[in-house]
Length: 541
Image (cartoon, rainbow, N blue to C red; front, side):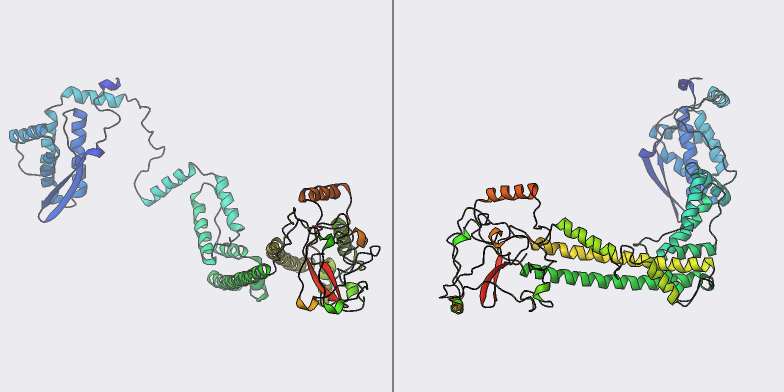
């Protein structure tokens, strides 16, 4: 039987977009249903509509005494004018004795028979005897429930979950619960509730892996906490066996509140230190010289107290450092005769020397692990125990504790280093100086001095063949700060100096470092008095 010959198609027509509200009242009881209006006499549509209206009335009217009257009152209101005339004619030809469900069913059969025939009934039976499932009709369930109970619903729900989940998913979930790790942004109580919730999901997944017991859940809660909190719990002298799950949650909630308060305090301190360092960096900014002038013939009026002086600059090595406090001049990094002078050797050589010193000597500082094997052994000996009095398990437990403490200390040091690095980075950025602008001749530049230095005609004289008093590795005649040096930084255009610097940095192994806060292009200088002599020195040297 083709689809055109079917009395009732396998897919019913949907009239949900043409629903009409039907309201009625019986003995002060109000009822309402929403059904479409029937406007066709096709057999399949007629029968379907009448039975749908009857079903909705039964669902809306809970009182059985009101159902019969509701059938006769509501159905005519869902028919078009033509079909309403037919319904009234059916009731006039065979009026019902009373308005009951049986009498309504009899009237309904007469109403359908006004358009259907016995052949329609025969064709429907034949259609049911030899059905053909259309492509767009779903297959019924493999295991339909016998009755609609909670047990049958649970079984159907498990089958529904098993359509996408596997036994491996159940096994992975149990393993996740056995070794959990609490995220930083999840509270302790919320983490425990999530553990119990996930443990309840295990039974709904396919497989035979059992969910965690109450004691296993308590152990999982303990294992999921941070190591520092677990160490404090062990140090308190209590065990998991002596604590209930509620007491364990309460303990870790206290640890959580303490950690949150400490973190908030650290953030406030960092913010305060950051504001202080930024203010300090802003105050330490210096205005760079305007370049383009030749300083080879620059004149600076000196004070009257320095007139007639022709002595060279001499600083007693045993005197206190005139630039810094806390050390002698012989120990200062700006002293050219100091073996540790920062101007000697390249940055790579100094870095290698520092690395060799830190790794080759037995210092009291620790390396990346923040602890050494000797320190751990010393702690074990100082504890007053011996290897003979400890089992292997106890020994392993002791060193595991030491290992966890060292790892925590290492993590803390790394955080401190990262924080210090972030603090020093803005400071270094602020200390960068703008290179001089070329195009001006500094040879005739004059710098007015203070009133106390006016009238002085003496100049600073330094023997060109002596070692540079500011840097190491060259004579004063070769120093870039010597105005009489042909390579003096103020002579020539910026392009010429840049090309010369690039050629020098790539073709020769310079003995000056540009990485240790010292730059050969710095033109910023300051003045100071030593032995009644006025000298220029580079603050970044």
